[in-house]
Length: 330
Ligand code: KG4
Ligand code: ZN
Image (cartoon, rainbow, N blue to C red; front, side):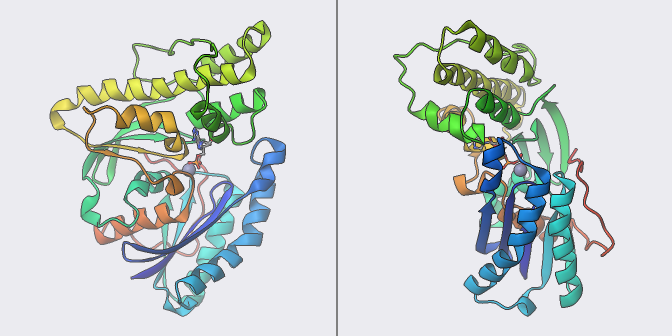
């Protein structure tokens, strides 16, 4: 089946064309306009989606050597995300489905991230049961995947980890988004330069927390003992080690079930996070998305759809359906 998937939940406009599980083409435009404001401006995000979506679809069809009429289904992110941004993708998806007289399908953005390590892989490559660490700008959660059912194990008590990186990046004058910029600095940090050691919050708890780390960063700036890079290094080290250590302790509780671990979401691009998990021989099998599929993209939405579709776990949506900015996975 040839289908088009669309993702516009935040500040990436992305479309992909699949032939069953084979990704034919993906076209993504990450909106640079928000950089000058140090964060996503929702109105500007919607405007950019409106301007770019048509061009990206045209380019994708051309590159895949297809015409609109060849498409057999349209898939789009329903939520969670920015309401107006989601609605741009949804209205384009509805229009195409209605004009082409083909089915429309809605996908949860978080389920998209979960499937991002399996883009292009045969459906049998996806483990039926797994532990999932989902780390993005809006979410930090650890849950159990039981086929298409999800059971929450722990989540953040306050900020999401990506959000904490972005806020700390802004306070310390890094480019937006802070997660990416701090990681680039982290990889080249000269370890001869002292940095503040920050304790992992809620050490003996499986829940995550980031607001305390952010306050700690503000105090360190006032103390003037370390420069911005050293403070960012200390913050990133603690924030990432927290993800690894808490996930590992939960992983060990599930040891007998020998569950695979899936790590996904924008923060799964982090080089130190990847290293900590990949160097841990006890955690196997381990799945990370390719770097180009870590941040928001339409290929992950298409991939999640195809797995549901071939397992008979999704129905076409009515054309009066709506986006849901607070759509839950669990
Ligand atoms: O999944 P995503 O693209 O959007 C949401 O669904 O939220 O994640 C974006 C988040 C941002 O907070 C960004 O700073 C963070 O992912 N991020 C990173 C890295 N690359 C992106 N955080 C840490 N290290 C990175 N290399
Ligand atoms: Zn996302």
